[in-house]
Image (cartoon, rainbow, N blue to C red; front, side):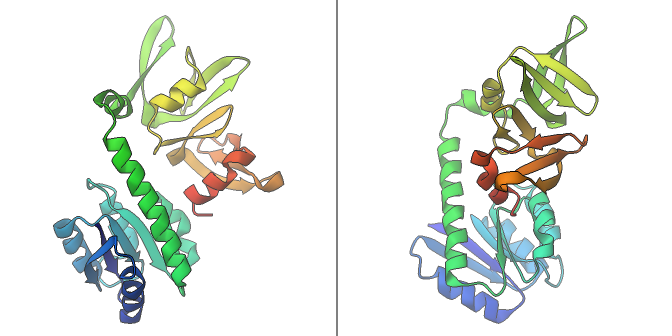
Length: 246
């Protein structure tokens, strides 16, 4: 059973979500909360797999709770439920994976739950991989050659990696380094929740994306924090839209 927690200060919204979710036998509603304080207590106590969370609530609001949820492990799959689409960017920053706009339909809710199940299924698969893979993703350092020495970079400081004329380079806020690896090797070594291969020549740190600019043929340019503009391939455009809740 997948444990679900509903948090909204509007009783009719809670009832509607409860009615829709109870039609799915694989889901178990473990709590229905009406304030941020109560939600925080129940999440800590019940460890739900999915949290449907209103943003505007008494006590802690949804964004504040989102920042808290980023720090706990295991982190529940967070779906914001709100009447406002202006919170989408902030929702991504706090780790939300879904976004339901009020008034929502049964189809909207079911689609979000479907995506949640797919994500949770991938997490279970990933957790069953070998300890070698686990160590690869939890190793926070990357060795690069610099002035005859090997410098250890924090992977979190990497803005993006790119291929140019058969060479691969790492860009950080403080410099550029050539590395004797392919982008595919880096992609396999880096945490897929932190880095995305948005183009065959680019691997970007999701947290370093500052802006997204619509481009031709329904694709995008990612503006990184160092103001570099990186293209998104047509094959990756749909994934980028879902990733950033566009």
